[in-house]
Image 1 (cartoon, rainbow, N blue to C red):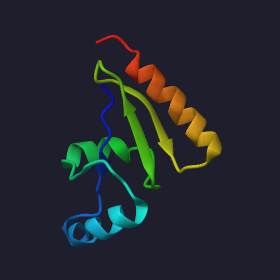
Image 2: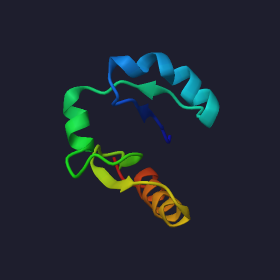
Image 3: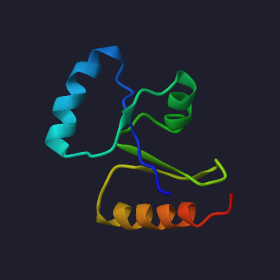
Image 4: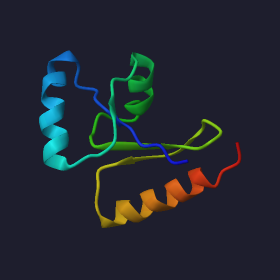
Length: 88
């Protein structure tokens, strides 16, 4: 199964804004609050957002993508396909 989570890395001050943000953007997946170690992994190569990390069934990072565009959408689709079809 494919699982999608949004990660709020903005800290405690942003928590009250999340319901409004998800309503505006029509996100229909859960928003999680990552541990510091995951934040370090996600932002090891820079602090740009949005940032997408695709993790395969084996727990390994398939790709990290920064930003969003039609080209990035195609790259993301390919990475998700690879992750979903990867062996456990």
